[in-house]
Amino acid sequence: SRTTYRVKHLEPSMVYSVVMRSCDSDEEWSVWSDRVTFATLKPLQLQFGKIAEQFVHVSWGRQLQTSEEYRELDKNTIIGSTEALSYHFCVFSMDQMPSAAIVDKQFRGDVTGFRVDTLTPNTSYIMIVRACNSEQQWGLWSEERIVTTQRVLSTSIVSIGENYVAVKWSRLDAEAENRIVSPKNSVSLAQRKQPTSFHLCLTSEADTIDRKFSTEECTYTADEDRTPMYTIRALNSDTKYILSLQACYGGEEWGMWSTPITFLTMSTVSVKVANITESSAEFTWGRAQQNPTHAADPNVLVWRGTIVRYQLLLRKVDEMRAQEMREREEAMAESELQKQVTQRSEEH
Image (cartoon, rainbow, N blue to C red; front, side, top):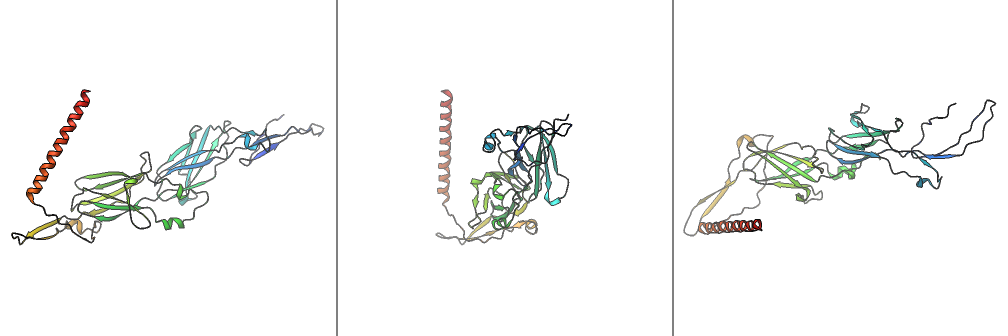
């Protein structure tokens, strides 16, 4: 009396034909039924979006499947329903295999993406997903995909002045990247989304400087690596700062902070004048000693760069004051004009 049977262990995205016949009590077999052709569902696939140091965006779905693609085999090929009641998503750390899943979550059928958080930088993970159909039967696990989180940015100081610091950063030199051999099911380095902007934070005992800037505002080193750089100004002289950098991958999604660097800005140049005559004067200059507490600290970077030239600016005081007065008057006139334009605009 049984008229249903579930055949298991079929191959995904494969076309099968089935016929049926019956046998009676006299061991007589009937003729075969008409042939029915069907195609099993295409497998679920994982796709990756933003890959940062501590998070990964992952989504899942199937390739479009229609009867048209099987017309040459059988125009009446039956296609199964791709509707899912739920999904089961798992993440495993390759550094701790075999191990329990570090992420083991189920989602409603209308959820097809997830942001995996609290990951470890420069670590490879295996991710898989499967679907539960309308009959509450779980399908096959998707093909394992391997994704490696990005390294934390490595920062280094290019130069330090009295009121500025120039910093550069990288993850891994290009030559080393090319030597990495990845499995065919891993996400390639080229697929990783590059940062859209950066956040540089400098902290001293007196204040904190936060600077966000886009990749277009970066400069690059002159060598073939073209390492990105950025110069932040308006610092205080002879002051200890702690510097950290983080990358943004779009949509205010920020990566991890780099390892802090502690540095000391240079002391300002002081000038002395001597041997003044009617038509000449001699000048000498130098820098005051830097804060001895910070300068002697092995954990504080003190710049020892080579000075290649100096610039001496000598002006007559009365001419300088006259120019300052003109600049103030021009600024006041511009401000008054702007007020008049604003007033007229409001009246109209």
